[in-house]
Image 1 (spheres, chains in turn cyan, green):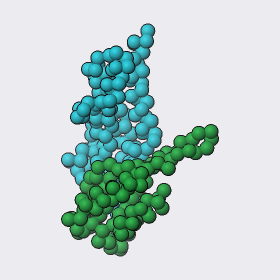
Image 2 (cartoon, chains in turn yellow, brown):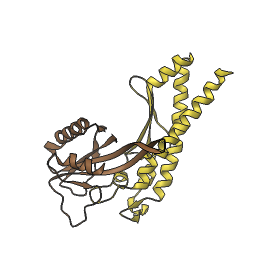
Image 3 (cartoon, chains in turn red, green):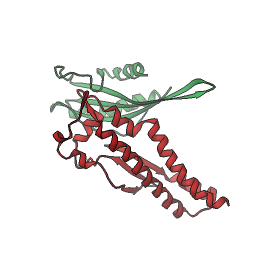
Image 4 (cartoon, chains in turn purple, green):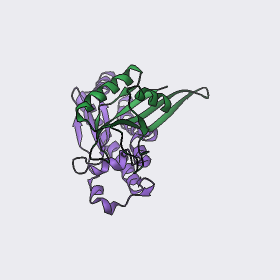
Length: 145
Length: 110
């Protein structure tokens, strides 16, 4: 389980028309922005994971086999139907289900606020927006001169 | 918002708890909901809070697999009718072998 960061096709199409730029150029730009966002958010998440607590006790990672090694390291950017791109942040769920209860809890185990915040908090969303804006502003500024 | 959500979920005739609040001694009810508030962002205008955006994770656990998907569908419809948007459900882990569960995100603005 984790977070999916998306760049919608509508937004890219709108920007292409607005600024009279080829769609393929913007698609490449969106993929670059997603890669940057992945590294930033996954980095925050990796840090949060080291401080992860389960029912008040710090998680002893030795007890959970190689769950920690299932943290994603490289962004896998996928094209969405109807345009736009998405990238997945968090654990590789196909390798380990244990990661799910550490983050989202069970009726007897509280979800980890630290891990959930690293993915879904307002601060995280603002960080993603800032990265996207920085990429687009830098690119579009070429056309303003 | 918590009270409103609990009241809504309880109209399905099932108990509702906070995720992680059951102790090891508590036995699971046959079917039940749990929830967890992941974020609540307030927005301000003229130094006054105007709206608050809530994001919840709602979990449904049951020992009857035949009702799982239908209950999730009905619950999402109930929330939608009350202006709470939901995401697609995914599997949730249970402590008991007898129960299975699904969870989804719910987004409310107040």
